Length: 386
Ligand SMILES: Cc1ncc(COP(=O)(O)O)c(C=O)c1O
Image (tube, rainbow, N blue to C red):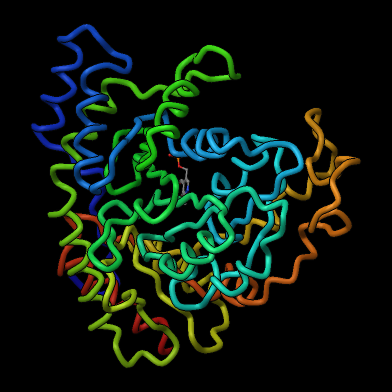
C-alpha cells in the first residue's frame, strides 16, 4: 500500500460472540428493563473501581443531572465547571436551574486549574465538576484538596476515563460522586448508558430514588436497560486488555512522531495511568491551513480532528431568546459571579489558547494496531512538514 492510498480504520465498538450471547440471554429472559443484569453490572463496576456503590442509568448526562440533584443543588447555587468538555458536563447545571461558573484549565492535562478553581469559590458554590478529558486524569489530588478545604462536593465526570488511575487509585474515587459514560464511542460501549459511583450510602440511596419514579421528590425514569447491563459486563471484562492496546498505540504514535517540530503527542503524566479514550496531539508551532490538512488526513481514513469549542461560548449559555424555564443567572435574587457578565465575554486565557485550534484528537481503539498507527504517523509527518 502506498502512503496515500486510503486505509480503512477499524470500527469501534468491537463486538464478538460474547456480546451476542449477552444480548440473547436478555431476550430469552423476557426482562428487558433494569433488573438482574443491571445489578450484576453495577456490582462488578463498583468492585472494579473499588468503590462502595454503583448505579446504572440511561446515559452519563442523566448521571450528571442526578449527581447535582442528589446534592440538592438548585436555584441561586453556583457550580464550578471546566469550559473544555462535552456540553453535558455543564448543561446538567442548567437542568437544576443553577448557575455554571466556568473556570480556566491548566495546560498539562487540560482539566480544571486547581489555583483558578480556588479563586472561583464563593459562599454560593454548591459543587465542582471536574472532567478527565480523553482519559487523561485532571490534577485530581490538588482539585480534591481544594474541594475538601472549602467543604464543597466534587463530581468527577469520568465519562472518558474507564480504568484510569492516579497513585494506584481508580478515577471515580476522588470526589463525592463520579459519572462514567457507556455511550457507543466510549471504552465500555453499550449503545447508550451511564454509571454513577459513590462511597456515600446516603447519596447512593437518593440517586436510586431519583432514577426511577421515587416517592416525594421530583424524580425521573433514568433507568438502564438489561441489554446495556449485559453488554456492560462484557465490556468491563475486556476493558483492561483494550486499555493496554490503546496505551501501546498511543506510545507507538508518540515514538513515530517524536522530533516533529510542530506537533507533540501527549502521553499524560508518567506517574498516572492515562487510558487514551483518544490520543491528544498538541499543535505546537504556527500551522496555516490546519483545517485542510486535517480534511486531507480524514479523506485517507485517519480519524483525526480538532477537539471541542469551549463551552462558555455555547448557545445554551448565550441564548438569543430567553427559554421558557428562564435563565438562572438572570434571576432577580441572584447576585453572584455571573450577575453582570455574559458567558461569551469570560476571560479564560488557557482555554482560549488551546480550544479549538491547538489540540487534535486521534482514535486508537482496538483492533487498531501497528499498521494503522504507522500509516497515520507517516501521513501526518508528510503533511505537517510541508
Ligand atoms: C466528557 C463527557 N461528559 C458527559 C458526556 C455525556 O455522556 P452520555 O452520552 O452518556 O450522556 C459525554 C459524552 O460524550 C462526554 O464526552
